[in-house]
Image 1 (spheres, rainbow, N blue to C red):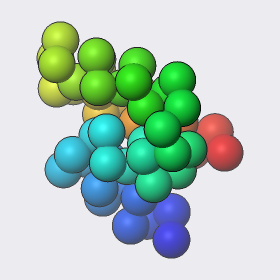
Image 2 (image 1 turned 60 degrees about the vertical axis):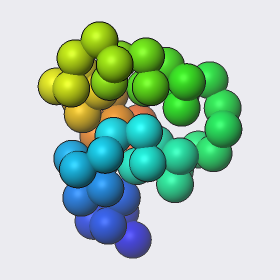
Image 3 (image 1 turned 90 degrees about the vertical axis):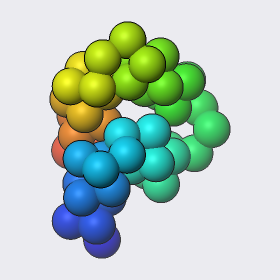
Length: 52
């Protein structure tokens, strides 16, 4: 299941974070990072998925 989340995080970072933590603070932070730059959003999403 983590592999699917990581693939989602690469394609659409907020989706990967949403699948891991739901509508928490990490999700909104990831949306902000993705809007500021796609790469920071991916890095944050993979980090959140790997951390939990």
